[in-house]
Length: 455
Image 1: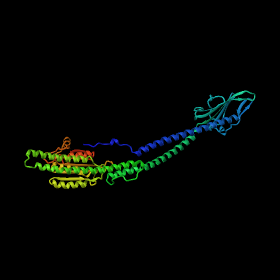
Image 2: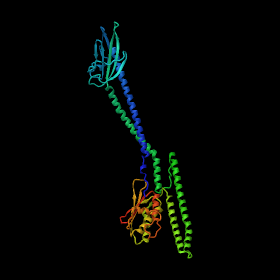
Image 3: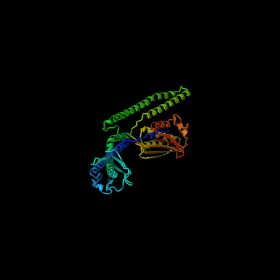
Image 4: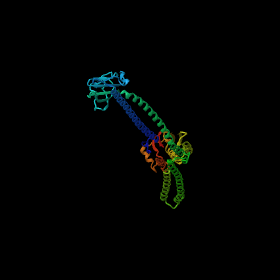
């Protein structure tokens, strides 16, 4: 007999879910903000470069001088155009020749970029200069009207190294993402604090439920937020109803047992009368004994179905010592020993623990061939309530698993030569089923049968 397990139903806690969800929102949100700011800053730098190149072209036009129908630039309008290797270069081409600024260290390609006449066009050109960084090139094609009315084709360009964009953008990105990371970390800490404060009432409910399970409290008496008030009120009502129902059920069962005593006593006295034949007397006696067995079994079964889920734990050692003292008197010829962890606790009804220990020990004394060993261990597997393992072994004959399963049926006895009604193991099996415990048998260290019950 094995209890159902719920290991597959485990899931992540609410705190973990909230933390993961908020972290994803922060990553997506801050990432989107950072990307947007990065794009806006890059566009603003590019616009600034475009304005600078436009201004350079306009200044170049204002610096052009006409001499004998020829166009030339006497003085570059921007000092950076006179500095070799600066990030700003410019050039002019006419039918009479080409002019390049002193900052131009490499000759641009012969095929300069063209555009519509009169319009300034900005392009990014990767190979404008050989073995150089990509350039932002602003080109401008014009028609220059000379003094004698002729129109000369004029092609101007100004270029800025892409590092003009890269360097400030890289610095800006480092600062932006560093600050966003700091803000994200701060928001995560704030969220953790908020989650801790928000889950505080839930933790208080958990602590109070654990106190109820240990028998230290009878109800939830804390003041809770409106979101939890309905839950705690309903749980208190459920606990009160369970306690009242348990008391009424026990009372009804006790009344039933008491009411059946008199009719059974009358039947017993009748079967003892002389004028009844021996055969009738034997049949009536069997019927009375069967009635006793049925009543006892059904009362125990009904009681096992109405157990409380939250109850004060029972000290196993104390109850076991009481039973062992009684059994020593009833079976003085049997050597009974016990190995019980002092702190062992049974999370259930005291009468259920006594039924389990009493039936298992009594069966072992009857069929154990002189030696009985009781072992009780507390099982700590990380759950809220620790489990309990009870085993009773003897020095008699071991049983197969199939034979042991048959003995769990009501009325089945292991040895017909020994008095009994065959209900002991059946009652233990009913209690095990009620607590979803595991009941099985194995060979005892004493050589005989060992019955193990794992709560």
